[in-house]
Length: 402
Ligand code: PMP
Image 1 (cartoon, rainbow, N blue to C red):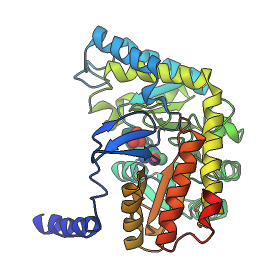
Image 2: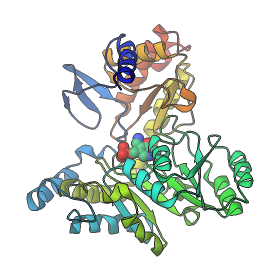
Image 3: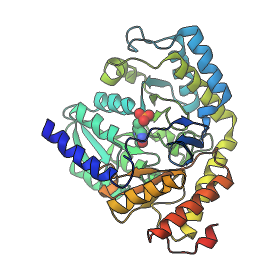
């Protein structure tokens, strides 16, 4: 055990040698949805998944405080024991109504929503068809359930079709798992084509809308809404830790029979439930998401602004404009140096290294918030461009970005 950890420690020391430990950033304080103090200096937050900027929404904060005063700081128990309060049931109903589903189940994190749902749905003898770029929680849920895992090429419906045909004679259920927006590159699944493949193979379909809830669709229900295929999605998984500004996860579905997931999903049963403050703030955040569609418009504009500014500066970018803007890096060392220098210049981004990235390639990942002003985005573009030019990564003139 120690030898394994020593190897990891020396790898971490190498990654940290250029400045900070990128996996140990500790903010002194958070000033708003867009700014924080780090090492005594003000930094612009460009990597927080705080898509709608709701973490400092006054109504959400008030709801959380009121719920704490009324119901205490924690539930101290599992959903299937003493940890379900009226608030949890109200949140599930509110979420189901928002998503237009008959049922919603609330988990303590988004990670656990995938872990619990996937492992309970697909067991030994069943087949899970996973996009190669799936989030770790999806891979872990697959392992926990002991289903046979078939990976298909990222966003490739033909590869999925081919693999499903190879499995056609095999017994067991087939469950396809996709994400609305993929977290590393910010690209969306080609959902309509994927749905056609699902229908041909009579498979089930689960879409993890973690990064697309509150972001895509006329009402913010995610990619399935945007693509008009909600009826073909059997299970929607999502999280409260991104656009809803809190923590927690869910799985929503229509078929009554799946209600038994509550006594089958271990990540639901064997962990304590969300505290009352979070439950109340998430209910309030759903209200805000519904009542303020302009937040989604600002978010879209901000994503396009950052993407266009960096593209004009000559950066090669990862995917189409979305709230996630990724810069593929030529190598690990450059990625680490770039990330450190951006922080020195007052811009916080996410350093993403293999194996957590597609193909194990290093990335500088940014995500915008609706709360960012155009001036803040211009500042970020100027800083990233200047830093990128020093590292030989941006080719166009700095003047254009400033
Ligand atoms: N699914 C996806 C696609 C994610 O990107 C994440 C978090 N990055 C999760 C699930 C887990 O969500 P949480 O952090 O809320 O546990």
